Amino acid sequence: MNSTIQLANIIFGVGAKVLGATDNKMMIITQGCSHVKCKGCMSPHTWDSKAGNAWAINEVINLAERQSNSPTGLVISGGEPLDQINEVMELIAKFRQKFAHAEVILFTAYQQSHLIKHYQDLLHVLDVVVAGAYVEKLTGYSLLGSSNQKVMLLTEQAKINYHDWQSWHCQSQVFIDNGEITLVGLQDTRNLNFGNGNNNTVFFRQKLTETMK
Ligand code: SF4
Image (cartoon, rainbow, N blue to C red; front, side, top):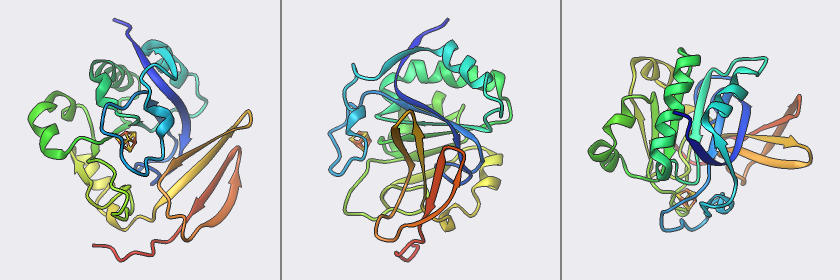
């Protein structure tokens, strides 16, 4: 089987504690979002399921294998990744075949209870899920775009790697590729501090101004 998956973007080199614990993660941003559009969504370009590019899943995996630094993890975001659940499952299976020790993290607007009821197969192949729709008025922190979202730690390794996730600073990465700028991660724009450049990547971090709950 070699299905195609509709993607807005593929990014390599996502850093430690940016949308996941490990350094040098691969990220796929799925195209299409069937949810009621969240006010303040940072990714409206992902809403249209026909936009972006169709990728053969084998081609995505080949691209990962060709990286000089093997990915330590796979971040799956969107759009809504579960709109392409069969393709996402195939991609995860093939990624795990090639990168057995890498972590897999998925961000979805579906709630934790919905995932437990309807997506058990998916939960069995993930390390971490961040579940719940973005709510603009609820300030996010660490891995959360808004504080209503839930982090599900599904493997023993995830429980170790993420034991202190609530104390992580919101962190983002800007990728500049052929003049195109992509922002990855979460940020609190009220308090930005720009840090050192690193290859084509500029990191910036900001301390949380909200008290952790
Ligand atoms: S589910 Fe995600 S991509 Fe869709 S509108 Fe909400 S924040 Fe945007």
